[in-house]
Image (cartoon, rainbow, N blue to C red; front, top):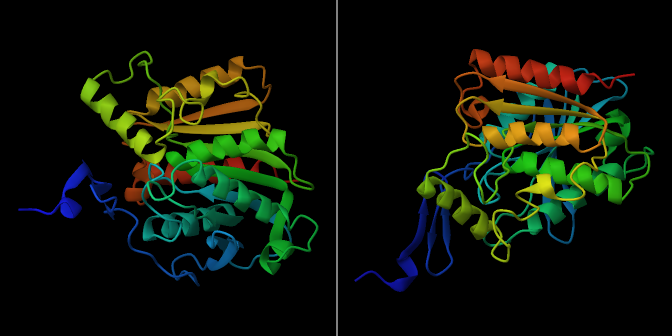
Length: 316
């Protein structure tokens, strides 16, 4: 007879399997690649600890032949707050490609994952990383690459799925806790992981599918009030339009079940009194985070160029 320790509590393919004894077997983001020189793009990367307290790390990317100050991107990886890492081949390859395409400096944030570290750990770690990055604004921070090459007058936050959720909330936090010398020019939200209890318009209504998404959220945040929690459904939060930036790019995919929430985000932002510019890019015929799994396809190349151009709009 199977021991209780090895009994499956929750099977959540293709992401993970959770056992009754609390163990989690992850199927995504388990492989990691070291930093260094990428032979395809000649982008250099380096890992640096940003929090001594939690031993969390960022991976810094510098484009080839970097000279002077360059736009700075702070990137938050996706994975439903439960899987993936900034150091997986998926994210390492994407950041190499984006940094080369845009000629920017990027800081890819790793954060603690649920269920071992339930929400708000991911948000706390992300803000710690933002503050660590901001500590370099005057050229006297702990990492010389950022002191030398990061333009703190032109900073963007970005992420995919759960990482887009994090990017939004970090942008809102920028209005509440000002960071000296740090100008957040814009945010790029790719297939953002937002949800809600009631279906929106043509959003999927299948109870089994909606329950699956609800279960994932509750696993990441056991003390949540549900799928209308402000972390997962920020559009009705009073501070929703308090974004600490003037430009937003939202990327959605035609066949992504999260697409209606991305569209709703754009609509609500325009109505919020925020006053900035909102752009929308839809990739036809594509699924959730397709650009990470099919980086060589035409739609992924178009999306990469759009994001690169958006980041560089803030150049002096």
